[in-house]
Length: 152
Image (tube, rainbow, N blue to C red):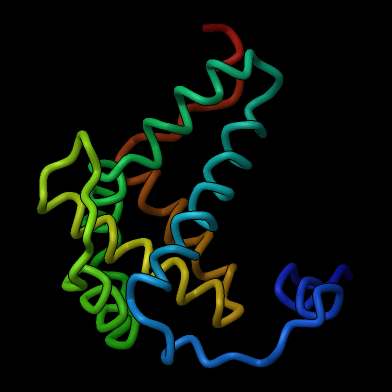
């Protein structure tokens, strides 16, 4: 069986042991933004070959703050107390910036979700992160069948 991505990266990149709880919520969100986008891009590409512009548009619609806020709402009841605490730290963090096309509420919820994603990734819990992401997308009806997508 192949190594997990976390242990593989740790070995190859010679990463030190870290304690994810020691990072600021915005640092966790920084990592979570990238990890969540990678999950979404992987899912979009897995639908089959299509024009890069179409992949970009689909990915953009799934990584925007509004979608992330809705995804959080869809999985909120599935979170552990510890995961909810990480989310709230991210949601309540004072950020100097805000997304151009998002409400303040959506932006804060998205930041909380990204902080949770970053925390789960840094914990080495990528399976949990992928499961929560897919569950949220399914509950929101944002996952089309591959065969339907190819015929559009």
